[in-house]
Amino acid sequence: MTTPRKLHIKSYGCQMNVYDAQRMVDTLAGEGFVETASAEDADLVILNTCHIREKASEKVYSELGRLRVAKDEAARAGREMKIAVAGCVAQAEGAEIIHRAPTVDIVVGPQSYHHLPELLKRAKENGRALETEFPVEDKFGFLPQPKPDAIRARGISAFVTVQEGCDKFCTFCVVPYTRGAEVSRPVAKIIDDVKQLADNGVREFTLIGQNVNAYHGEGPDGRAWSLGKLLQRLAAIPGVIRLRYSTSHPRDVDDDLIAAHRDLPELMPFVHLPVQSGADRILAAMNRKHTADDYRRVIDRFRAARQDIAFSSDFIVGFPGESEEEFSATLALVTQIGYAAAYSFKYSPRPGTPAAEMRETVSAAEMDERLGRLQELIDSQQSAFNRAAIGTTVDVLFERAARNPGQIVGRTAYLQPAHVMASPDIIGQVRSVRIDSLERYSLIGELATQSAPGLISQTIGA
Ligand code: SAH
Ligand code: SF4
Ligand code: F3S
Image (cartoon, rainbow, N blue to C red; front, side):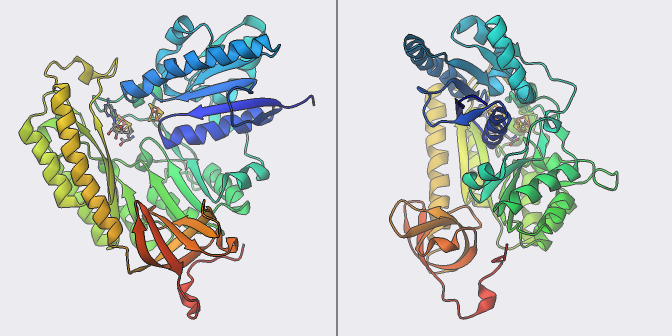
């Protein structure tokens, strides 16, 4: 093979894009590409984009402006730089990107990443290539597995896509259009992926999907398996210490999932369960197909199964027609549930979605004001949750050396970063840590003494 070509990928948006970026790197490794940290010296730059809110989408065009300069400079130095736009903006605005940004060589939608080598060839021959079809074949069957070295370099925590796409059509959301219909991967394929990752040192697995608990992949018995059943199977794989899943929808929480939280110590007691609003009229206008009370009942079921469970959520403020009382209902729900963390966004009208046609808009000033109040409440809950860890002993899965010399950082069950002074040997292990203090969002502690062997839970002899 000739000298390796350099590839730079910049990802925006959700965890699915982070995962997809790795699959693109793995696919292009087969074409002789190696990853580089800077766009300037890359032969191929991929922008892996997000369309969820207007701000996210617009970043693409400003980034393309910067890349055009880099591309021109490379050309002056006698080097060719190709620019590709992938992800959800590519899917939603493919033709427009080709039209608006002559600097772009390739546009590729999320379901066609396995065609990247072919698209590169086409761009070389024809100047430009666009692919935003939803191909009939399943891309997962064609995307190559990462090499052991690549897995090791990515660390002990990995995402595994188990489900993609969404059939829910919340009226504000572009995802059903950009990612297409809901598809679940077969259980056997997921088991293979998890085994390979575990064999190469991965200890924490986050199963991802736009609607992950709508999972209904084909099991080895020929039946559709639920997410709960899948989790149970994966927990039995040697090397799997922690399991998580994201993002789940309140409507798809079934008894299997609740049972998994009751029965599986590997399944972390931290669930991201977006509710969006606490007002039933708004939830109906959003087409969420659940009420605030339905959501409270779902939370209660989780809590009954596992006492130490904590939640995070997403909220939208200023959905068309949201009144002050309706916004107050959201605050009341947050107060009642008590979150460990949450994300909140100002409503952003998205082209092609039903809500974008709704007339009763909330003013920018009101949205800002509501967002401020909601975030203040969420911040106070998050701080209280973090402070409550001080003085307790918690399990931490250690990930890597921290910035301060001698310090190792890991995460608690609730994804709080935790720092201790220790030997790097503990990386990849779960250890008990006595938490002494809190610095911003990070817990600081010491390894608990090892006198009681039972305490050092789940350290596996891989
Ligand atoms: N699949 C996930 C959400 C994906 S989008 C789910 O169903 O929960 C992540 C979050 O972005 C959403 O939960 C919502 O809070 C927010 N979001 C989506 N569309 C938005 C829009 N048009 N304006 C503002 N926020 C939006
Ligand atoms: Fe979007 Fe709703 Fe589907 Fe989540 S469930 S991806 S918010 S349409
Ligand atoms: Fe964004 Fe697409 Fe994810 S719109 S949030 S990158 S599914």
